[in-house]
Length: 292
Image (cartoon, rainbow, N blue to C red):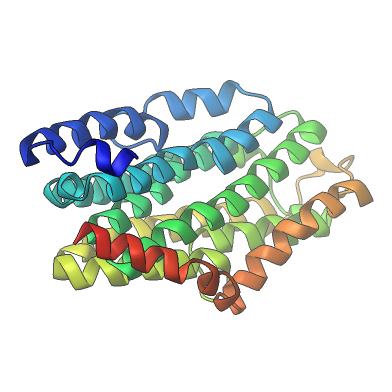
Protein backbone atom coordinates (compact mmCIF):
# COMPACT_ATOMS: atom_id res chain seq x y z
CA UNK A 1 0.00 0.00 0.00
CA UNK A 2 2.81 2.42 0.82
CA UNK A 3 4.54 1.68 -2.48
CA UNK A 4 1.37 2.24 -4.52
CA UNK A 5 0.54 5.41 -2.57
CA UNK A 6 3.44 7.38 -4.05
CA UNK A 7 3.39 6.07 -7.63
CA UNK A 8 2.02 9.43 -8.82
CA UNK A 9 4.69 11.51 -7.08
CA UNK A 10 7.20 13.35 -9.19
CA UNK A 11 10.90 12.43 -8.78
CA UNK A 12 11.63 15.87 -7.28
CA UNK A 13 8.93 15.43 -4.68
CA UNK A 14 10.22 11.96 -3.79
CA UNK A 15 13.68 13.46 -3.23
CA UNK A 16 12.18 16.10 -0.97
CA UNK A 17 10.28 13.49 1.04
CA UNK A 18 13.43 11.37 1.42
CA UNK A 19 15.40 14.41 2.62
CA UNK A 20 12.69 15.13 5.21
CA UNK A 21 12.78 11.53 6.43
CA UNK A 22 16.58 11.68 6.60
CA UNK A 23 16.62 14.76 8.81
CA UNK A 24 14.36 13.05 11.33
CA UNK A 25 16.15 9.70 11.24
CA UNK A 26 19.63 11.27 11.22
CA UNK A 27 19.01 12.59 14.74
CA UNK A 28 18.47 9.03 15.91
CA UNK A 29 21.53 7.52 14.15
CA UNK A 30 23.05 10.13 15.03
CA UNK A 31 24.61 11.72 11.93
CA UNK A 32 26.84 14.79 12.00
CA UNK A 33 25.91 17.59 12.77
CA UNK A 34 22.81 16.29 14.57
CA UNK A 35 24.83 14.19 17.00
CA UNK A 36 25.32 16.57 19.92
CA UNK A 37 22.65 15.04 22.16
CA UNK A 38 24.20 11.54 22.24
CA UNK A 39 27.35 12.03 24.38
CA UNK A 40 25.43 14.19 26.86
CA UNK A 41 22.65 11.62 27.12
CA UNK A 42 25.06 8.73 27.66
CA UNK A 43 27.16 10.48 30.29
CA UNK A 44 24.09 11.45 32.34
CA UNK A 45 22.03 8.28 31.86
CA UNK A 46 22.14 5.24 34.16
CA UNK A 47 24.03 2.28 32.73
CA UNK A 48 20.90 0.24 31.76
CA UNK A 49 19.57 3.23 29.81
CA UNK A 50 22.91 3.67 28.03
CA UNK A 51 22.88 0.00 27.07
CA UNK A 52 19.36 0.20 25.62
CA UNK A 53 20.05 3.52 23.92
CA UNK A 54 23.21 2.35 22.18
CA UNK A 55 22.27 -1.25 21.51
CA UNK A 56 18.66 -0.76 20.37
CA UNK A 57 17.40 2.78 19.93
CA UNK A 58 20.24 4.13 17.75
CA UNK A 59 19.55 1.34 15.28
CA UNK A 60 16.06 2.65 14.63
CA UNK A 61 17.59 5.45 12.56
CA UNK A 62 19.49 3.05 10.31
CA UNK A 63 16.56 0.67 10.06
CA UNK A 64 14.23 3.54 9.19
CA UNK A 65 16.52 4.75 6.41
CA UNK A 66 16.68 1.27 4.92
CA UNK A 67 12.89 0.98 4.87
CA UNK A 68 12.46 4.48 3.41
CA UNK A 69 15.07 3.64 0.76
CA UNK A 70 12.95 0.75 -0.46
CA UNK A 71 9.91 3.04 -0.68
CA UNK A 72 11.74 5.99 -2.25
CA UNK A 73 14.59 4.57 -4.38
CA UNK A 74 14.94 7.80 -6.35
CA UNK A 75 15.43 9.64 -3.09
CA UNK A 76 18.32 7.57 -1.80
CA UNK A 77 19.95 7.43 -5.25
CA UNK A 78 19.95 11.24 -5.32
CA UNK A 79 21.02 11.51 -1.67
CA UNK A 80 23.76 8.83 -1.79
CA UNK A 81 26.71 11.28 -2.12
CA UNK A 82 25.49 13.17 0.95
CA UNK A 83 25.22 9.91 2.89
CA UNK A 84 28.78 9.04 1.88
CA UNK A 85 30.22 12.39 2.94
CA UNK A 86 28.36 12.36 6.25
CA UNK A 87 29.46 8.78 6.84
CA UNK A 88 33.12 9.75 6.38
CA UNK A 89 32.69 12.71 8.74
CA UNK A 90 31.00 10.51 11.36
CA UNK A 91 33.76 7.91 11.22
CA UNK A 92 36.66 10.33 11.53
CA UNK A 93 35.08 12.98 13.78
CA UNK A 94 33.60 10.42 16.19
CA UNK A 95 36.94 8.64 16.48
CA UNK A 96 38.81 11.90 17.10
CA UNK A 97 36.36 12.93 19.81
CA UNK A 98 36.54 9.48 21.44
CA UNK A 99 40.35 9.70 21.42
CA UNK A 100 40.17 13.02 23.34
CA UNK A 101 38.01 11.67 26.16
CA UNK A 102 39.30 10.79 29.62
CA UNK A 103 35.91 9.54 30.84
CA UNK A 104 35.30 5.92 29.82
CA UNK A 105 31.59 6.43 29.26
CA UNK A 106 32.13 9.53 27.11
CA UNK A 107 34.73 7.64 25.08
CA UNK A 108 32.29 4.81 24.36
CA UNK A 109 29.55 7.33 23.51
CA UNK A 110 31.67 9.12 20.92
CA UNK A 111 32.84 5.78 19.54
CA UNK A 112 29.18 5.06 18.75
CA UNK A 113 29.08 8.14 16.51
CA UNK A 114 32.12 6.84 14.65
CA UNK A 115 30.77 3.32 14.26
CA UNK A 116 27.37 4.49 13.07
CA UNK A 117 29.21 6.30 10.29
CA UNK A 118 29.70 2.86 8.71
CA UNK A 119 25.91 2.57 8.54
CA UNK A 120 25.75 5.77 6.47
CA UNK A 121 28.65 4.56 4.34
CA UNK A 122 26.96 1.24 3.65
CA UNK A 123 23.66 2.92 2.77
CA UNK A 124 25.41 5.19 0.28
CA UNK A 125 26.67 2.23 -1.75
CA UNK A 126 23.20 1.08 -2.93
CA UNK A 127 24.64 -2.43 -3.15
CA UNK A 128 24.10 -5.81 -1.50
CA UNK A 129 27.61 -5.70 -0.01
CA UNK A 130 27.10 -2.25 1.48
CA UNK A 131 23.63 -3.07 2.81
CA UNK A 132 25.06 -6.22 4.38
CA UNK A 133 27.57 -4.00 6.17
CA UNK A 134 24.72 -1.79 7.37
CA UNK A 135 22.70 -4.61 8.92
CA UNK A 136 25.75 -6.34 10.37
CA UNK A 137 27.08 -3.08 11.81
CA UNK A 138 23.80 -2.30 13.52
CA UNK A 139 23.74 -5.76 15.06
CA UNK A 140 27.41 -6.09 16.01
CA UNK A 141 27.66 -2.51 17.26
CA UNK A 142 24.72 -3.16 19.56
CA UNK A 143 26.47 -6.21 21.01
CA UNK A 144 29.89 -4.57 21.40
CA UNK A 145 28.84 -1.18 22.74
CA UNK A 146 26.21 -2.73 24.99
CA UNK A 147 28.96 -4.91 26.47
CA UNK A 148 31.25 -1.90 26.89
CA UNK A 149 28.63 0.09 28.77
CA UNK A 150 27.91 -2.89 31.04
CA UNK A 151 31.61 -3.26 31.85
CA UNK A 152 32.00 0.46 32.48
CA UNK A 153 29.03 0.24 34.83
CA UNK A 154 30.52 -2.71 36.72
CA UNK A 155 33.77 -0.77 37.19
CA UNK A 156 32.02 2.43 38.25
CA UNK A 157 29.98 0.57 40.88
CA UNK A 158 33.24 -0.55 42.47
CA UNK A 159 35.60 2.40 41.91
CA UNK A 160 33.14 5.34 41.72
CA UNK A 161 35.19 6.91 38.93
CA UNK A 162 35.29 6.53 35.17
CA UNK A 163 38.52 8.47 34.57
CA UNK A 164 40.90 6.35 32.50
CA UNK A 165 43.94 8.02 34.05
CA UNK A 166 42.91 6.92 37.55
CA UNK A 167 43.63 3.27 36.77
CA UNK A 168 46.80 1.29 36.25
CA UNK A 169 47.73 -2.39 36.33
CA UNK A 170 44.20 -3.61 37.00
CA UNK A 171 44.89 -6.92 35.27
CA UNK A 172 46.71 -7.99 38.43
CA UNK A 173 43.68 -7.34 40.62
CA UNK A 174 40.64 -7.99 38.38
CA UNK A 175 41.84 -10.37 35.63
CA UNK A 176 38.39 -11.48 34.45
CA UNK A 177 37.25 -7.88 34.03
CA UNK A 178 40.52 -7.02 32.28
CA UNK A 179 40.17 -9.87 29.78
CA UNK A 180 36.53 -9.09 28.94
CA UNK A 181 37.10 -5.34 28.67
CA UNK A 182 40.18 -5.83 26.47
CA UNK A 183 38.35 -8.31 24.23
CA UNK A 184 35.41 -5.93 23.82
CA UNK A 185 37.68 -2.97 23.01
CA UNK A 186 39.49 -5.09 20.42
CA UNK A 187 36.13 -6.01 18.89
CA UNK A 188 35.19 -2.32 18.85
CA UNK A 189 38.31 -1.43 16.88
CA UNK A 190 37.44 -4.07 14.26
CA UNK A 191 40.09 -6.70 14.97
CA UNK A 192 39.81 -9.60 12.47
CA UNK A 193 38.22 -12.65 14.05
CA UNK A 194 35.77 -10.56 16.06
CA UNK A 195 32.30 -9.34 15.08
CA UNK A 196 33.19 -5.69 14.42
CA UNK A 197 35.55 -6.61 11.58
CA UNK A 198 32.88 -8.39 9.53
CA UNK A 199 30.46 -5.47 9.44
CA UNK A 200 33.06 -2.76 8.80
CA UNK A 201 34.73 -4.84 6.08
CA UNK A 202 31.46 -5.21 4.16
CA UNK A 203 30.70 -1.49 4.45
CA UNK A 204 34.21 -0.56 3.27
CA UNK A 205 34.17 -3.07 0.42
CA UNK A 206 30.82 -1.80 -0.82
CA UNK A 207 32.08 1.77 -0.43
CA UNK A 208 35.17 1.04 -2.51
CA UNK A 209 33.08 -0.49 -5.29
CA UNK A 210 30.97 2.68 -5.53
CA UNK A 211 33.22 5.53 -4.41
CA UNK A 212 36.69 4.22 -5.18
CA UNK A 213 39.69 5.42 -3.19
CA UNK A 214 37.66 8.16 -1.49
CA UNK A 215 36.62 5.48 0.99
CA UNK A 216 40.22 5.46 2.24
CA UNK A 217 39.27 8.50 4.35
CA UNK A 218 37.56 6.02 6.68
CA UNK A 219 40.95 4.44 7.39
CA UNK A 220 41.83 7.55 9.40
CA UNK A 221 38.96 6.84 11.78
CA UNK A 222 39.88 3.15 11.97
CA UNK A 223 43.48 3.97 12.93
CA UNK A 224 42.33 6.48 15.57
CA UNK A 225 39.88 3.91 16.97
CA UNK A 226 42.73 1.43 17.30
CA UNK A 227 44.84 4.12 18.99
CA UNK A 228 42.38 4.99 21.75
CA UNK A 229 41.32 1.37 22.27
CA UNK A 230 44.91 0.18 22.74
CA UNK A 231 45.72 3.24 24.85
CA UNK A 232 42.85 2.39 27.17
CA UNK A 233 43.96 -1.24 27.49
CA UNK A 234 47.54 -0.16 28.20
CA UNK A 235 46.59 2.55 30.70
CA UNK A 236 44.04 0.57 32.69
CA UNK A 237 45.37 -2.98 32.73
CA UNK A 238 49.13 -2.94 32.13
CA UNK A 239 52.01 -1.39 34.01
CA UNK A 240 52.45 -1.13 37.76
CA UNK A 241 49.41 -1.70 39.95
CA UNK A 242 47.95 1.34 41.67
CA UNK A 243 47.52 0.42 45.38
CA UNK A 244 44.49 2.71 45.48
CA UNK A 245 42.48 -0.14 43.93
CA UNK A 246 43.54 -2.85 46.36
CA UNK A 247 39.92 -3.16 47.48
CA UNK A 248 38.49 -3.83 44.00
CA UNK A 249 36.75 -7.17 43.49
CA UNK A 250 36.58 -9.01 40.20
CA UNK A 251 33.35 -9.70 38.33
CA UNK A 252 30.99 -11.99 40.19
CA UNK A 253 29.14 -14.98 38.74
CA UNK A 254 26.03 -12.94 37.86
CA UNK A 255 28.05 -10.34 35.97
CA UNK A 256 30.04 -12.99 34.11
CA UNK A 257 26.80 -14.75 33.19
CA UNK A 258 25.42 -11.46 31.84
CA UNK A 259 28.50 -10.93 29.69
CA UNK A 260 28.74 -14.51 28.39
CA UNK A 261 26.17 -14.33 25.54
CA UNK A 262 27.60 -11.00 24.35
CA UNK A 263 31.14 -12.39 24.28
CA UNK A 264 29.98 -15.55 22.50
CA UNK A 265 28.26 -13.45 19.83
CA UNK A 266 31.32 -11.20 19.43
CA UNK A 267 33.58 -14.17 18.84
CA UNK A 268 31.06 -16.40 17.06
CA UNK A 269 30.02 -13.81 14.47
CA UNK A 270 33.67 -12.92 13.93
CA UNK A 271 34.67 -16.51 13.20
CA UNK A 272 31.43 -17.75 11.58
CA UNK A 273 29.70 -14.72 10.02
CA UNK A 274 27.87 -16.87 7.48
CA UNK A 275 25.42 -17.85 10.23
CA UNK A 276 24.06 -14.30 10.13
CA UNK A 277 24.83 -13.41 6.51
CA UNK A 278 22.78 -16.32 5.16
CA UNK A 279 19.68 -15.03 6.97
CA UNK A 280 19.77 -11.58 5.41
CA UNK A 281 21.11 -12.23 1.90
CA UNK A 282 17.82 -12.59 0.00
CA UNK A 283 16.16 -9.58 1.63
CA UNK A 284 19.13 -7.30 1.05
CA UNK A 285 19.46 -8.44 -2.57
CA UNK A 286 15.81 -7.51 -3.11
CA UNK A 287 16.34 -4.11 -1.49
CA UNK A 288 19.48 -3.38 -3.52
CA UNK A 289 17.63 -4.29 -6.73
CA UNK A 290 14.80 -1.93 -5.81
CA UNK A 291 17.03 1.10 -5.27
CA UNK A 292 19.05 0.74 -8.46
